[in-house]
Amino acid sequence: MPRLTVAQAIVTFLARQFSERDGARRRLIPACFGIFGHGNVAGIGEALASAEVDLPYHLCRTEQGMVHTAAAYARMTDRLSTLACTTSIGPGATNLVTGAAGATINRLPVLLLPGDIFATRVTNPVLQELEDPRSYDVSVTDALRPVSRYWDRINRPEQLPAALLAAMRVLTDPVETGAVTLALPQDVQAEAYDWPAELFADRVWHVPRPRPDAAAVDRAAAVVTAARRPLLVAGGGVIYSGAGEALRSFAEAYGVPVAETQAGKGALPHDHPLALGAVGVSGTTAANEIAAGADLVIGVGTRYSDFTTASGTLFGAEARFVNLNITGFDAAKLSGAQLVGDARECLSALDAACAGWGSEPAYRASVTELKGRWARVVERARHAEPDARPTQTAVIGAVNDAAGPRDVVVCAAGSMPGDLHRLWRSADPKSYHVEYGYSCMGYEIAGGIGVKLAAPEREVFVLVGDGSYLMLPSELATAVADGVKLVVVLVDNQGFASIGRLSESVGARRLGTAYLDRGGAPLPVDLGANAASLGAELIRVSTMNQLRAALATAKRAQRTTVVHVRTDRFETGPDGGAWWDVPVAEVSSTAEARTARAGYEAGRKDRHPRLRPA
Ligand SMILES: Cc1ncc(C[n+]2csc(CCOP(=O)(O)OP(=O)(O)O)c2C)c(N)n1
Ligand SMILES: [Mg+2]
Image (cartoon, rainbow, N blue to C red):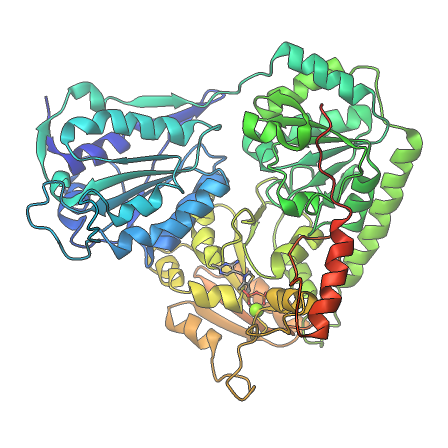
């Protein structure tokens, strides 16, 4: 019976957890990120410092950032691995909430170990304790409950073994996964206990590939083989399952074009004849026109967010849906026929049941024609003269040209995710990493660290807007300290191109969407100097030639390099023509808002309720 503190038991246990899928085994939690304070330094801090097991510690600069790092790490490893995150009590713990919500929404495992107030309560209120007069049982870590897929507070050592096992089960279950929180009262962390030795045995968590129900396959195949103009929509589930090959062979066997969500981009190489690219609000005209005329949508591993469905307006009123998903929750969306299971298994089961079927030849011809037309739009958008000031779409083209086929682009919020979704040419399923479930400003650099840690052999290009950069530049210092090499392209348009445009379109007059002084003049803010002050190499560019040279230098460099480029907030890239539901003021004193409202009412007429039984 090893006698260890609760914190020592946690550290020892975590170092001995493995995940396994398809026979490949890896560490489930290979490292711990954190920031110490009085709520964890004597517990988890002492345990990590004294541990005889292998659990390297990384000091991050913000708790939110480290959760993004852990989520990005999990995404890059197809959810087979993640990082632990330790914090103090109080603000350190609540800083986790945004990152946790992002992880849970993106269905990515992260393990959060916030400190908590004394279980014994003998010295309460302690520093940073929330006092709730209705109950001494309430703490700020309760704020993590709704954003966690498993949440527990360890008030006694005896509770720990069951909680640890439940936490690992949820992290490794593709149906349930998301943020997992074990709140650790600071006194309990330091308490010793005689643990059963088996708690610390190596434990392998098998990640299953559930096969779909046979009758469900027959029902789905009946819907599929009745269609003439089918469309595959590939979501993140295709990539996590490694189902790209199964997707390609299904698409080729039956002549089904493939459109991709943000999380699914890269499922099929961009130059495949059936690859229509991005779908939905941030989609291409090719995918969106095909989507509008499709009589069948086969959604694979997609959550069907409003960006994918164009807020319910993209697919035709008569379209039918067949949904292949690991969760029944997602498979049931849009009244689709449901195939619940692993994406790869579901695709091959459906493939076997559809023999002899195929899409119409005229439809296939229209796919080729629309794809060719969009390719010319991309070519124009990516082009800028060598001496010209770069446009945002030309920046994206230049970064894409500089990146090797296996290198990774990382982005999350602002106007770039839409341009990237439409314009980026992905050759590899792990090369496109845009966090668009939560679209969280501040994810970019922190997420880039997680990507690079998970795939050190790949160059990581972080595209970050000035607004996003200002929210979380601090993780640059973490990248520098830990020697995690990133190429950060800071696209500085002095404000919010995205929300500025949206504001104008809803009649809100671009209020508060530019970084200007009270008199409307540009600010003396130098983000490049800020990046250099955090330890990054800095290259400033003002022409396309300089940008291309800077990217080549940054790629060769050993150190994290920031390429600072100024662009124009008012420029826009090409658009796929889809609608997005952002409700506009029903009454207003301004003509702009009244006009916008009329447009809004017209747009929402195309929304279909999708209630027809599958
Ligand atoms: C944490 C957070 N706060 C607010 C938003 C809403 N929002 C989305 S994009 C955006 C502006 C982003 O600015 P920037 O990074 O400069 O990108 P740009 O729009 O200029 O391309 C805002 C405020 C968000 N997505 N995340
Ligand atoms: Mg900006």
